[in-house]
Length: 259
Image 1 (cartoon, rainbow, N blue to C red):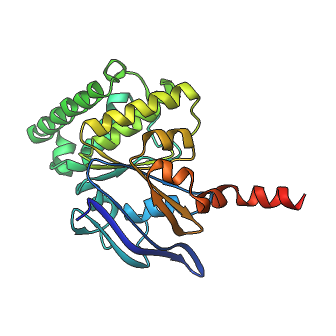
Image 2 (cartoon, rainbow, N blue to C red):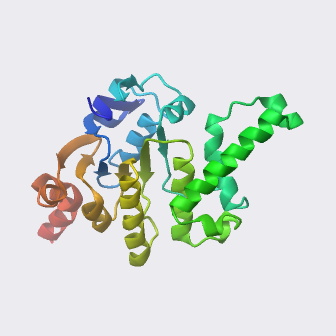
Image 3 (cartoon, rainbow, N blue to C red):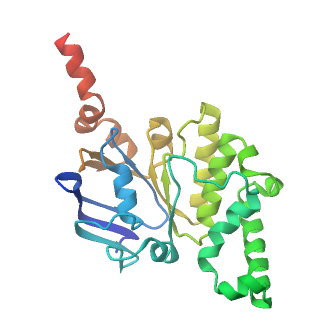
């Protein structure tokens, strides 16, 4: 049984089919990339996995648990977390506070504990602080714990967003275009960082347009085009797959031929 498995999943919005019978799997400890042209349905797949969208049909499981009827917060609790293409940090909060937001999915104290700052509240908040510091230390951001999020360089903000995902106690991390807006040096640093996450035991499912990142980081790659899964394989297999080349470059080739 795969860590994450999707069988013939379909997502329809009225008369529009955004994802059409797609099947894929992610095994524990892998880095798997999901690629495809703009509008292929990649982010829709992430929204289906995380419960933002209730899938129209098909099956999707994580460690054998059915995801299709779960709400987003319960999906986070079983070990799936994500980042977004556009940064979703709290810019005017400190780095440590941004990470602590992720730990609060595991909070057991109630509203009244928080309001009256009971011993239970103070104990749990202290535990969240220790956990957040440990995460920041493990990814090399501990020295920035008291900085405001919006004061960090762009690459460090990306790492902070991933740190917040880790803080939910995620087993599977979904990264939505983490290299977007990065220069080559930042992209190279991101590659190193993602490999370190794998070495620490995390499983990664990645959407990315930067093919140098995809080809250098992925154990396996899936290719989505117009909502359909058109290819799966090792990086070298995908790079030479005619259907993939056509999906990415077919329009340009046809235009050149017509000219």
